[in-house]
Image: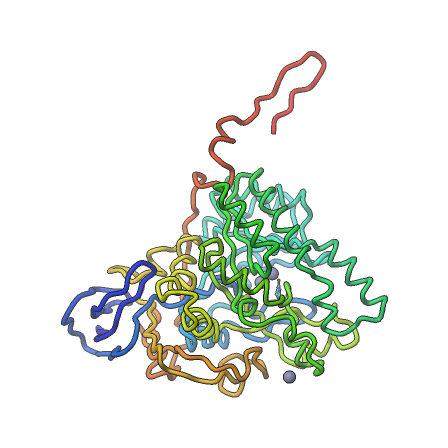
Length: 483
Ligand code: DUC
Ligand code: ZN
Ligand code: ZN
Ligand code: ZN
C-alpha cells in the first residue's frame, strides 16, 4: 500500500518547493516529480508540511483534586483534527511516587492514542530513589525532565532540589525543563488576596504577576548554568521571562523558550468578563497577559529568541472549574488548545505577516523535534522520515466552536474566532487520519517515540567556564572546596 501526495508545495523549516511525495510503510519513500502510488491525495493549492508536534500536553492528568478531562483518546483526536501528529505529554509522579511507577501509569493511559507521542518526566520530589531511577527513564528514551517552581505544597521543588536534579539531568545528557513561577510569592499573594475578599478568577491573575515568572525564569537559567544543563522554559508568557531567555541565549547558554498559542492570542481582559464561568474557564498558570507582553512573544518568535509554540493542553469542564467558586485558588488551572494551535498560529502568525510559512513549520514542528531529540524521524519532510504530514489548505476557513470540537470539554477558549488555514489531509505514520477536513482516526494507532539524549557537549555552561573551573586551593587550616 503506497500513497502519493500530488500537486502540492512542500514547505519545510528551510525551503518551499513544488514536488510530489510518496509514502510507503509509514515513511516518506520518495520526493520528486510524477510519482505514482496506490492511492492519490490531491494537494492542489495546498502546502505539504511536517505534522505539528505539540511539546506540552497534560492528558488525563491528576491535578488539583481532579483529572484533566481530555485523555489520550479525545486529546490525540483533537491533535490530529488540527494538524498535529504528535504530542509530548508529562508523566507526573505524585510526590513520593517513583518515576518508573508513574511511567507505568502513563504507558497504560497512552495505549488509546490516535497519534504518536512521547513523554517528559516531571521531578516533583527528590531523594536517592528519584536520582537512581532517572537513569532508567533516560534509557527508555525520555530525556527531558520538568520541574515545577510553583504549586507550593504540592508539586513545587525548592532550589536545593532543583540544583541537584539539574546536575543529574546534565550528567545524563538530558535537558531540564521548568515551569518558572516563584511559588513562594504566588502563595503569599494568593493568601493576601483571599484575606482581602478577592475570591474571583481575576484574582488568579493578580496572584501571578509577570515578575514572579521573570524572577523564576532568571533563577532557573542561573541554576542551569551552574549545573551545566541545557534548559527549556515552558509556557513563557511575558516580556520579563522572555528578556531573561534572550539575554541567556545571547551569552551562548543553551536555553529555549516556549510560548503558548493561548498567550499569543488571548489577553488578560478575559478575566474582567462579568460571567464567572467565562473568566474561570481561562484560569491557567501563568495567566493571560496584556498586549505588550503578547507583542514581546510574537517578537521572540520572529527573531528566534523563542523557539516553539505549544498549548499546555490541560482541559477542565465548566463543572470542574466551578469547584473553585468562592476561592480562586481552587479553580483547576488549565485550558485547551490542541485542536486550535495550528490554525490559530497560521491565522494570527502567517496570516498577518508576522511569520513566514517556513517559520511556522519551524516553531510548530521542526524546532520541537530538534530540541527534544527526535529529528529527523519527526519534524522533517525527508526520505526516511516518518510520514507524519499535514496537507494544509491556506484558504480553508472555519469558526472555532465547542460544538464541533474533538475535546471532551463543553467550551472552547477560542469560541467564535474565525481561522483561515486548515488541514485538508493529515497522515500519521502514513495512515490518513483526516481526509477532506474530516477526522477518521483509529484509537491505539499511536506509538511511543523514544528520544535521544543530547549528550553532554552542548551544555548551558559556557565552555570557557569549564576550562577555567576553579581548583581547590590548599591553605593551612582551611579546608579546600571546589565549585
Ligand atoms: N498550568 C496550567 O495552567 N495547567 C497545568 C499545569 C500548569 O502549569
Ligand atoms: Zn506549567
Ligand atoms: Zn462568556
Ligand atoms: Zn503544563
